Image 1: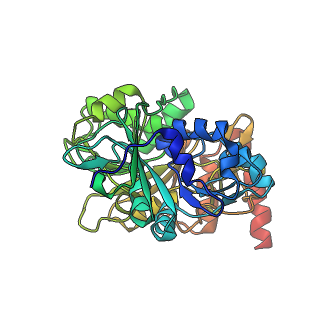
Image 2 (image 1 turned 135 degrees about the horizontal axis):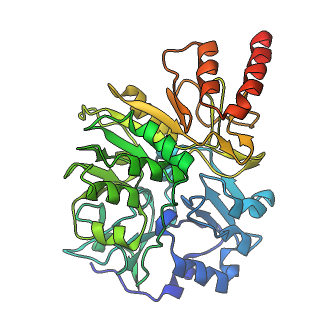
Image 3 (image 1 turned 90 degrees about the horizontal axis):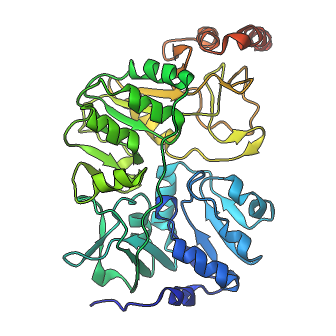
Length: 412
């Protein structure tokens, strides 16, 4: 049965008090929905929105539109701070696989799905496949937002057109993002990380200046494969430099330029899949898995802060815990945290985290890299760990860190 085509404003007829509605986040966020809700904020009274909104990509506060609105997310951001303080935003502290499991059991009253127009009776999630397919399977009702501007990679999960309750036709290119230009310190950091990656490895990176610099430093490698939550312009440039294998690449979303979207369109260079596929181990793959992620702080115990900046909760753990576990279980793999040694005049290697939570415990990370070198923590006891981390801190901070460690060691 072909579902009815409805006008965009008819979506809001499903926004009723007591309803739980899944809306896409990340690069799949629906601008048309945002504008509809801005025009009719009363529709949100008594409604709970659930979404995988991502700091740095999504900056709109849906819960701020109405005092009766509720928003449930999995990562904190500055954009949501006012509504969080008002009690209208719930942040579930889950890694990506935990978020996927939550959505699989949610049974939302409605899921809005950002899809391509149908081909052979199937609408696909295109270059934004991370959480949408999971929410689609569990929702009681589904509206397909069929976007002619969505890239169509050859491999991406889909929904049969006949399984949708209604469709809305839109034309809205995905948002684009540019990789930041690397500083000399980031270039030095990236070279050290690239030296740890063997040819033929499977590589995961996150968003940020450090991962972008690492992809540039990998241009001399060969036969690398991507397996990550996202594919970026760094991957595209590494492909053009001859560093990437011809096939076998896997991602959840495309985060980059229009050039990246065009490179992915109608191609099987990168397969797209949901989080249950991208973020869980593949026991059949013998290649070493290299998880390369950035951080805000690392302490001398090897504990990592991904979420707190200057005492403010600004993010979440995302997929980093999932990928670090894959890397540590992979023969020859590494769990690498790469970060500049300073933020301005402040050391990002600290004696002890003072944050309310620890994003990655000391048991989950085996390698820390800064522009001053690499600390391989796996074979080291606490004192040797501290020495290795002090050695890659900014020189101006090393003496203070050594003094702080002696005090911590004496109290231990």
